[in-house]
Length: 238
Image (cartoon, rainbow, N blue to C red; front, side, top):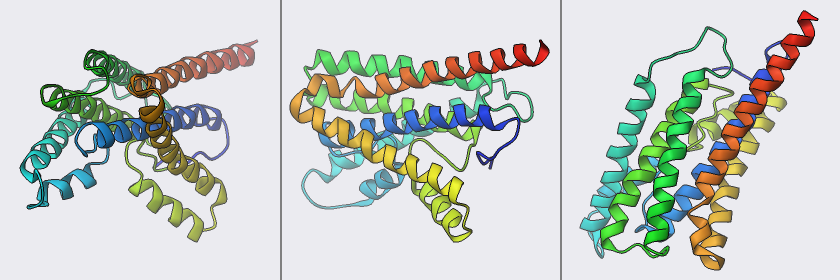
């Protein structure tokens, strides 16, 4: 696990950290939309889905199990595709180019999700719910793989149980800088979910656009960080 730290590589890791915070906002928003509008399932938090699959009994438990199971399976497909994608990057590279490709694939999936969301007028019926869950879960799986391939400060960018564990470890070890970074990620997940929940009440169509917006901002931050690093290299050469 790579911490933010200091030194020559610290600036690159800070850009990577900013990208991961934006991706965590996207995950929080996507999970809120899925849970509130797609039958009470998660598309990023697979721990919750595994529990939902096992909750036998109650109203419509079979349908809930199918939806939660679909989310788990498709999320794993996205993970597998993300880890299998070629281009591991050079040793010590803060942001491998292959990860940018994964985020572009996430962006495309979010665009597909938004198109479906708008076609059903933000009220997905039985015909739309499962396809939307599948698209969103695949995007979150790719995003989780991208975050793990960067591996900054124990940040996962889709679920925060591991990040929360790392946060408590940092606090116990009095590593305040890393603790602060991880705390921001935990809050970002909550903030993303809160934004989506509010938009679902006030402007439902816009809620479906939030994950795409945050991912687009993440890609813009990747480009800005790359540009800043190139400028720094040029100044050093001069």
